[in-house]
Length: 110
Image (cartoon, rainbow, N blue to C red; front, top):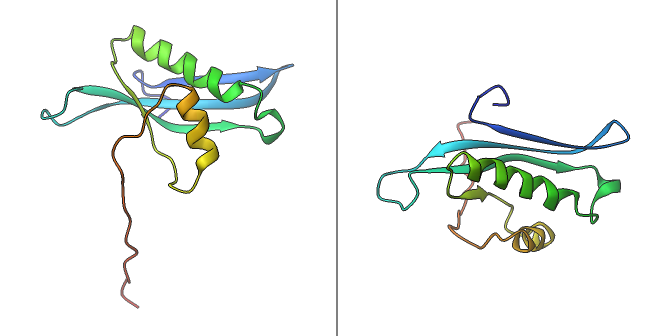
């Protein structure tokens, strides 16, 4: 994905050391939706020692700026339902709740 020319890879460094990164790709939506294309965060990571310092928000802000300048009107990210800490960070970055995905475990052939 990082080699896709329409992907955005943002890296945060401190003293030459990678402390976080974000990878977003551009996807097409079904024509019934408002946005024909949107960015979606595929990977987002900040080293634990650097969390709660604004690194994660800075990565999202930079990716959002890059995508907006490319004409992409929306950025999406998926999170685990019980991860309130991540949802709190995302809300501070301007995200709002959207679709809800529900999962059912299936019993596979044994």
